[in-house]
Amino acid sequence: MQNAKDSFYMALRARLTAINPERTFLLRGAVRPGILVEEAEAPFNQLPNDVFVLRWTGLAADMDLASAMAAEQCEITYQTCGTQSFGGLDRGRALSAMDEELMAMLQPFYTPKLNYAATPAAAMLTQVFWDEPVFGPAAINRDRLGRSASVMVYSYQEQGE
Amino acid sequence: MLADALLRSAAGSTALLRVTGTNTDTGMSEVGLVATTFAEVPVSPVLMRKLRPTWQEGGESKWELLVSATGVAQQVDALDLESAQALFAMTLAVTVAGQDYLIESIASNEAFGQVYIYRLLLREARQQGV
Image: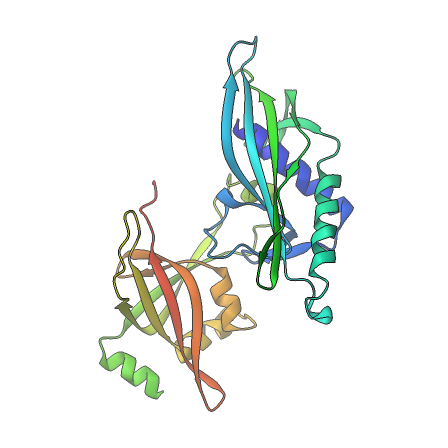
């Protein structure tokens, strides 16, 4: 299951770099594409703005198959205060831009499954695939506008996993 | 300087800021596969004080760490960073007397336009696996 989570994140990260190379942020001393896995970083007292934050929540498994299938729920949270040059008045537009980027990142709805514990990452036999995202309502917190989208990510358990 | 003297006179001690290395721009470190290189940056004098206990079930105690601005400035220069904020942004945890704490928020006190003390709101970190 971890390989599916890693593959999903790396696919979105690569797609984001192609869709909007300008969306970067500084974390742990490195400039990175504007996406992160919350559970692989130090705890945040406040989530960063203008960054997609992946949070793995639900888990289900279907064992009545030749290969067990895991369904993992990924909550993708993002928020923005707009830009300083507009005094934050463009925060609605900034959120819409992130909505569109997320929709573009999620297509196509599959990616090869790779084992990132190996160097270089080793291709596995199956693919990771996911549903269309379910977008939540915009959350308004004073000057911050955010949204959360939920995606169900499916993968087959391969031998040795 | 006066702030340093006050901190020292009130049993000031040393805190270790656990900062990350800068070579983290790899996919493996972003998915938690590779432990980042860490360095422990000592700052002193510091003073810990426990905040008013509003204990909740499963909640951790909160502390305030008063850190000398001159101690921080020395490390900012040594690490060739832009500002104290950059140093705190790189900090994953703070160790005082062997106990790890996570930073909740950072504030500073100024006099005549100069910061003389940083106030770090800390939360006790839970024990991690070895």
